[in-house]
Structures are given as structure tokens and as C-alpha cells.
Image (cartoon, rainbow, N blue to C red; front, side, top):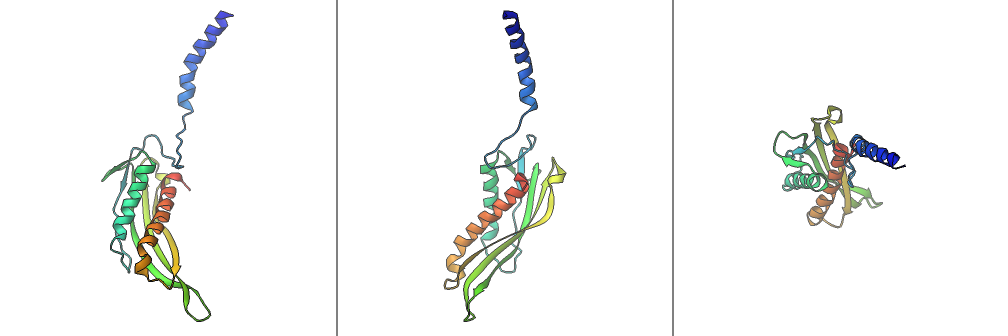
Length: 173
């Protein structure tokens, strides 16, 4: 009986490391699926090429995207030569009336921000994409002018855009 246990013990001791390493899965609470060899990410500045320019939007969007990847992944942010590379531009920033009432006056206005993003995955080229358009908007009462609500709306729209970009690049949605 003792011999059976010794054989089982040695077999387990030998096979466990093989089973443990061959079935490795990287779990993430953010849903990010990043291969183990990927260590760095490069996120270039998103220039503002929209006709209507919010002077702080470019920096706010770029910084928030970088913060998202630094806080939600173990990737190191680099200035060049990243394993993953995100580039893009702000292509549209506009506000227009919506929800027109019977008096031909808008009840709401809509702020829309659109970005064009390219992603290069140097470990898996099939995951890369070019010129993907991401657009989000929020409505605000027409009784308020854009200047009074702009900071809050831009921050919230940026959060949505960043979540969309994050999901498309590393969550594979």
C-alpha cells in the first residue's frame, strides 16, 4: 500500500508542473486579453483635426487613454517601439439641435465627438486595424449653452470613447 502512495506521489510531483504550465490562462478583471509576450504599449498624441476645436480635448483624450491602459493592464507605456501601438485623431467635434418641438425650437442639443483610430499589434497582426471610427454623443438642454456644460460632457464622452477603444484593442469585442 505504501508503494502505491509513493508512486502516486512521484507521478503527481512530476506531472503537476506539466499540467500547470500547459493550461495557463491569463485572467483579468477588466476583460483584457493580452498575450504573455506583450509588455509595452505606445499611445501617440491624438491631434484635433475637427473643424470646431476644443483646445483641451486632444490632451484630455490622449491622457485619459494612456491612464486607462496603465491602470487596467500591466503594460508599460513607451514613447516608441511598443508591442501594441495606438494612433489616432479627433475628426469631429460638433453640437447640433435635436428633439425639435412643435414650436420649431430644440428641446435638446447634442454634443458629438468622433475619433479615427488605428491599432497595431506587433505580436498578432490579425488583431490590428486601420482607421476605425469611434463616435459618441451626449444631449444637453437647449436652455444651457455649450460653454457651461462642455467640460462635464467632454469628460463623459471621453470615458465612453476610451472604453470603446480599450474594448476594441485588448478585449476583442
